[in-house]
Amino acid sequence: MLLEGKNAVVYGAGGHIGSAVTRAFAREGARVYLAGRTLPKLEAVATEIAAAGGAAEAARVDALDPQGIERHLGVIVKEAGRIDISFNAIGIRGDLQGTPLIEMPCEDFTLPVLTGVKTHFLTATAAARYMVRQGSGVILTLSSSSAVLSGRDRRYHLTGGFSTACAAIEALSRSLAGELGPMGIRVVCLRPNAIPETWTGDAESARVKTYMENGTVLGRLPTLDEVAHAAVWMASDRASAMTGTIANLTCGSIMDST
Ligand SMILES: NC(=O)c1ccc[n+]([C@@H]2O[C@H](COP(=O)([O-])OP(=O)(O)OC[C@H]3O[C@@H](n4cnc5c(N)ncnc54)[C@H](OP(=O)(O)O)[C@@H]3O)[C@@H](O)[C@H]2O)c1
Image 1 (cartoon, rainbow, N blue to C red):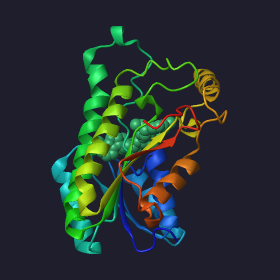
Image 2 (tube, rainbow, N blue to C red):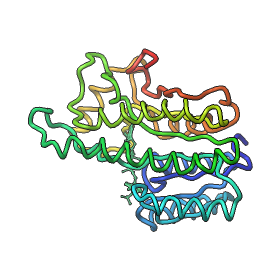
Image 3 (cartoon, rainbow, N blue to C red):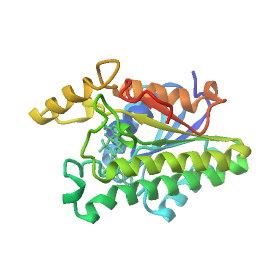
Image 4 (cartoon, rainbow, N blue to C red):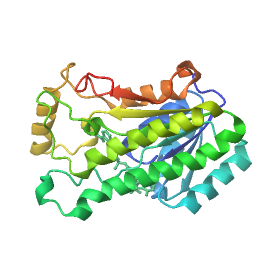
């Protein structure tokens, strides 16, 4: 198993991406610590993992609250001794999309930017302070194809502040990788394209899905399983030479290295 003996904390572990990655981490042998705002959702995933023979604990943690994050990590380290993997998958209000920037209230534009940058800064630096003492660890961050203009015509998507938020998270990830690399800590940002399984199945979603699929080289969009498998590999020692990178999980809607 790729993550045998590792302790992993996942923020937003009750969400689509967070729960898929948490389950995959557990399947690969990691002891998983599920953090998020809604305890019943986290407990449902933790119970499922435990029933399959994995080790999982759920806790209510607001990933925008520095004291709450610190308290939670302190409990983990007291119990398990170390933090090997930190992954932040919280929702950053990517739903505030569809409005042209020139018609968008400034608060709607800045909300995902401030939320995304703040939560990734707080969770990554809090884990890194423990990882520095250990001399090892992996921090995974999460952006999306919106970080750069993607798709066939390169002018999609009316993404409001979400695009800027994702670009900022990627920049933060590179800065952290540069700072933490000499201390043995890797930082990798996962950049999935939109994942249709996480959408509502209405007519507009179907239209957007077709449009986005037509803008990828593979002619489709990624699945939750594909994102989870990539997260496992990036978090594992098999990816030990990899840091400061953006893992391009866009099915080829982006073809360059940025
Ligand atoms: N889904 C996609 O197609 C896609 C594609 C590319 C990138 N992404 C990125 O991935 C993020 C997550 O996507 P998703 O589909 O997994 O969203 P989701 O299903 O809505 O899950 C987001 C999770 O984040 C939790 N959360 C939100 N604010 C939090 C906070 N302050 N502290 C702790 N937990 C918090 C939510 O908990 P509560 O339910 O308790 O609020 C929820 O469980 C998106 O925001 C986006 O940045 C998504």
